[in-house]
Image (cartoon, rainbow, N blue to C red; front, side):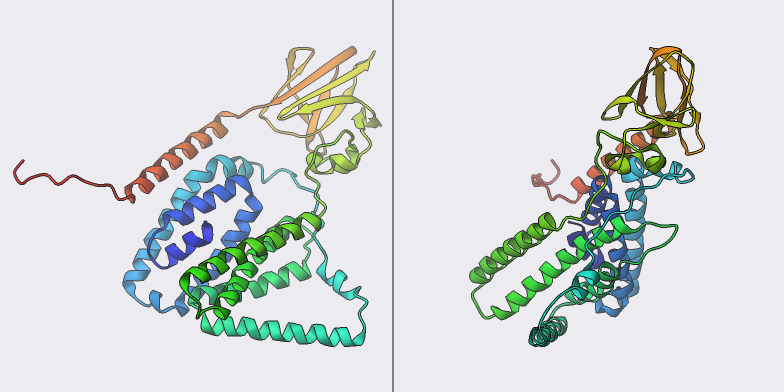
Length: 368
C-alpha cells in the first residue's frame, strides 16, 4: 500500500494512500516504517531524473502534498511515537537481533571449481537480465532496481556501530529487498510473455506473485533470525538491567536484593507485574523493569513511590515478612493527550479520504 501510494504521490495523483500506508506501518512495525521511509527518500532524490517533475506546477503541488503528508502523518502517529521520544534521554536499549550472515554462509560454501564457474556465469546472466529490465521498463522500475543496490549491500555487509544498534533495521530492509526482488522477477516474467493475450498475462502475473511470495515466506519461516522479544520464566538481572523484555529468556531468574542476586517468584501478564517476596527484615529490591513515572505500584495493597536505581530500573523497599508487589503501567496525562491528538488526526484523515470518493449527485431542475 505504501509503494502504491508513493507511485500515486510522485505522479501527482493522490497523497492519501501513501499516508494511510505509512501510518499503519508505524503502528504495527516501527522499524519497517523507518526502512520504508528511507526508501521513499531515495525515490524523492531520484525524481528530478523523471520528465514528470520538470515543471513549476509539479514542484508546487508536490511541496504542498509533502507538507500534508508530514503534518497529518505526525497527527496520526503521535500517540505511538510521542511516548517514545519522551524517553529518548533514558538508558533504554534492546538486545541486537542475529540476522542471517550471508558473507559467512558464502565463504563456507564447499563447491568444486566447475560449480564456482557455473555460479559466476549464472550471476552474470542474472545481472544482464536485470540490466535489460532496467533499460526496457518504466521509471518506477528503474528506481526500484537502483534502490536494491544499496539495500543489498546493507543486508550483506551488516555494518555495526558502537552506539547504535541497526540489526532490526537490517531485518526490515531484508523484507523490503525481498519485496523488490519479487516485483523485478514478476516484471521479468511478463517481459517473456509480453506478446501473449492480456488474460494469459494476468494469470501468469497472479501465479508469479503467489509462487514467489510463497517462496519468500518459506525462506523467512525456515531462516528466521534469532529474535529476543519474548517473555520467559527466568531472568538474569545483571544481563538485562536495561533491556528486560529482550534478554529475559536467557536468564537465571535472579533479582537484586540489597545488591545481591536472589531468586524470587514473579508473574507477568500484559502490562501488569506481580512479585512475591518473603523476608523478616526490610530490604531494598531492584525489580528488572525500566523506570517510568507512569507506573502505579503497590506493596500489600498500599501505594508506594519507587526510586530509580543506578541501572535505570525500579527500586523499592519491602516490608518485614511477606511482601506482595503489584506494578501496573498506565497512561499519564501527556500520553493521553497524545492519543487524543492521534484520534483527531485519524478523524481528519478519514474526512479527507471520503472527500475524494465520487458520490452520485441527483440532478435538480433549474430554479428548483
